[in-house]
Length: 78
Image 1 (cartoon, rainbow, N blue to C red):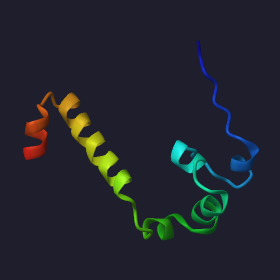
Image 2 (image 1 turned 180 degrees about the vertical axis):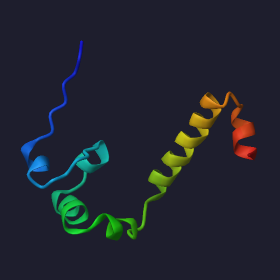
Image 3 (image 1 turned 180 degrees about the horizontal axis):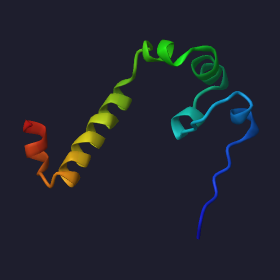
Image 4 (image 1 turned 90 degrees about the horizontal axis):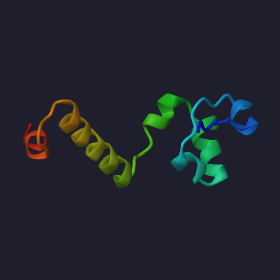
């Protein structure tokens, strides 16, 4: 079974090319400010949260372990 994903008009009319669960759960005013008002360069200067950084690190460790056939300990030490 194939799932078709359709991006709603509210995204395409504002020129947004990416949607995610974290964006969908964000309050409308915060989402509008970050993804419509701010430029990508301005958005990069916003502080990130610990969950995002932690998730990114876990993803990178697992990816390196799977793709380079290393143990988790080898990846962390490297």
